[in-house]
Length: 265
Image (cartoon, rainbow, N blue to C red):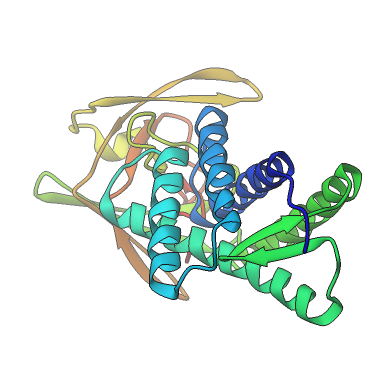
């Protein structure tokens, strides 16, 4: 019979939930705010107390896990649509399953005394120093994997962009800049920066704040009906994007700037 300390159980799972949300954030390309991630992690820590209950059947355990995951995701990331929410929840589940799978594998192979698993919840009876070092190593490994995954997108590839708005359309070439992490403040939709002359008659409804080495400011922006992006590897389209207009974009044949991760091309 093992002794489980509730404070350690909560603290460890709070920390793990925070870590899992950071990984989810990187995979989903969302920008989570610390004031949202902390209460979401608190929910994860509180839900971990289910380990103290008698072993639950699969249906009850799954429904509880699903409800907790949905609440955690809604708390951690601003709701901007059902499709985005489902995607974020699926990614969060994937990251959770990956983590639990690793822990179960470790438990089955080595049977460490410091790990208890019940109702899909993991309890670590280890020192804070060991936990922090292990979590940091896991985060660095995950960050490296994500960087390699995202690196499949070539930063030198030419993107053909077609913007549909107000019954018309504009086509231009854009170059990939992974440093373009601009988002519209209210919806948090990603932003494509385009040459202002391409959209001279478009009415802009938003201002997008930006900051560069040379200073900071705002760019007028509008939400198109749809944007289609094509590369040598395929094409994709989205309605969840804003077009910001700038006078200092044109670089040779390129008349736009976008993040190559915007559509996972």
